[in-house]
Image (tube, rainbow, N blue to C red; front, side):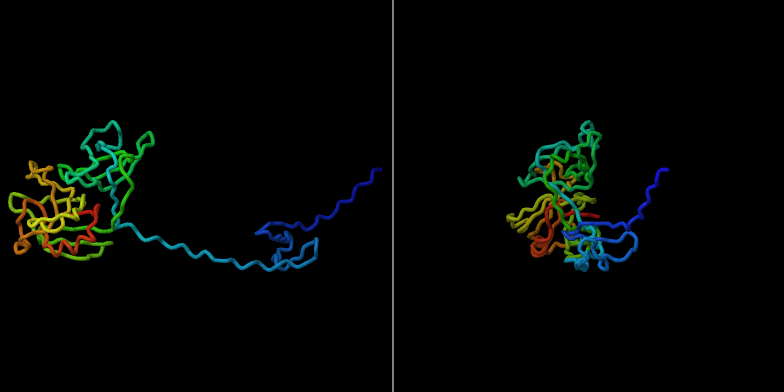
Length: 268
């Protein structure tokens, strides 16, 4: 009669892990902590767990981008289209330079990919009718810039307030369009900044905007609305211009360091 082999008792299993070059042996049966175990090979007590060099804290929420706006330079001439598609209707053509021979920039307000995976960007256009937007290929634009400023112009009170991160920095009196020459209302942006500008009539600094006069369309470059100083501060606040926004020279000099290219403008 064949002798049955005796079943050997199952040994207490061990789990061996390499952690930073240390051998940690944990009992799979007893559940005791590794620091209280001994190795079967040496009979020596294991080292206490190392104190970590640093401890990861609780995650913190990043500051919001509620008051941040994006802009981008036009890197190559491009067609702005009514939809993010190469077959969509062309609504404007973007040049790389402005009529003042400065770098042309656009305000970025949206992103999308077409069916082929190509990236498109929705931008504000410096074109009539005011408030026009269009879609351009992302490859036509340079790297994004960001600003946390916004200029809000109140045509009823003839005041302009510059905000940074949603908080008012300064409020100044303005001169706006005279009867028959209205300053356009809507959402615009600072298109260029003429820092070396010198004119007795228009003051020491001038800013070009994406807004355009609906009356002065035959003016040089098409009647873009500017923000500039004045040689008649006594007329401000008032309705004294052909659509541009006039600011006292001392005020526009104080505002200039904060009024960057790409800054959104709300005229209401």
